[in-house]
Length: 233
Image 1: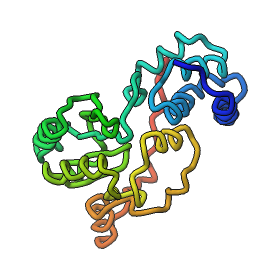
Image 2: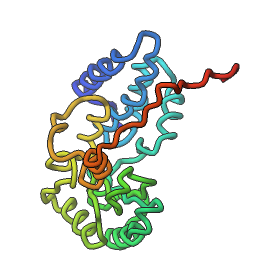
Image 3: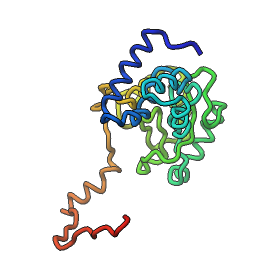
Image 4: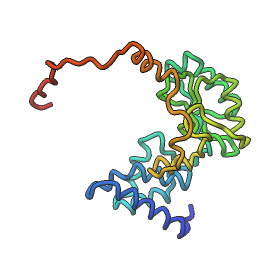
């Protein structure tokens, strides 16, 4: 792999140093996670160049960078698709249709878990819980929510992504960011889309609405206090 062009490396170093500056002196190593997202925002995966860059910025060995990059599933070790399509197959989504969605999309695209379509548009991933059980079954595209999916809607979703058609999440921004765009956000650089769209839907807020209607609040007991921790805890 060719080294980064000088202008690209200069930009990555500048942004990398900005990331590192957010951490207390002496704790720069904690910046490795967002730095790896920064690398992915450029290369679409954690490349050899990216590992070397993180190593140089933090003063640690490439092996130490690789040890972290291979531990977390959000860091990709080969080029990822423009859109990472994650189908939730954990229990609730599975019984609500997630397993059928997964099988249908795999057959439709002709790829399996962690594989990418030949056009480089879609990487398919079986996700362990998208933290949106009240909208099951759920798909996430570059970590944006697509709620209450069906096999038919999932096929249309991946077809629209591959065709370049406008695709809007159920909640969140008005359009799905690309994988690289979202990685830049995860590195800690705002994309200006935080106030677009809905964040919490009606099912999520149902308990809060019922509590307000019935005047329920957090129980309080002025005589209660937290127990003192035992020695060694």
